[in-house]
Image 1: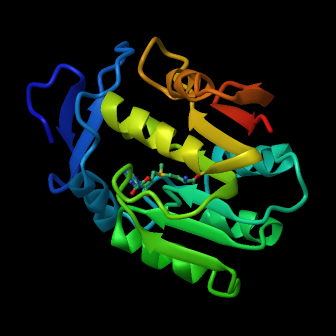
Image 2: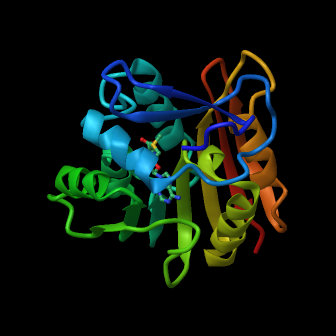
Length: 220
Ligand SMILES: C[S@@+](CC[C@H](N)C(=O)[O-])C[C@H]1O[C@@H](n2cnc3c(N)ncnc32)[C@H](O)[C@@H]1O
């Protein structure tokens, strides 16, 4: 946690034990450092499902809109960075021959692996991005509610790494919370960065009161 950083308000949870880092409202800049692993570990220590992804209607709706927006019925090899507890991983699994899901937090990896234990073609691993980008290429990359935690440098490195791993004709799908309250660094900003990668063309753009979704296809 970074006391005094103007990009962040540092507060503590009601129990006073878990560091909470939030960006100041109205600041459209990325953080100067990526949100730390310790921060996310603390969130999983405080709560099994830190973002209530399993119970929030906004997330269930986001998953449904996302699966409906995938351009093809099936994919050869998919990659899902920041899979959290594996809720979307489970929905993606039946559409893929092979799926690699990763998260930085060991507890998230454990829960996600349990969530897809009946899908032998799904692998769940710990990976801290952008350092631990995977080997090989993918025809589908799905990244949800992760990019805005990264510094400008890490974001650029991750997006470049994802683009390099995308097969011609493959899709990068991103869905992120959109803050309607102001110009805070949010889904709209990180999706602009993603859409600026070379060679990608927009196939789907969805923008609603809660989230922004983009399906970008790499030209052949
Ligand atoms: C809001 S959750 C993602 C939700 C999930 N993608 C979904 O759609 O249900 C963000 C996840 O990203 C993980 N994460 C944050 N920074 C990361 C990094 N640098 N590398 C890998 N995972 C990271 C966190 O541990 C957390 O589980």
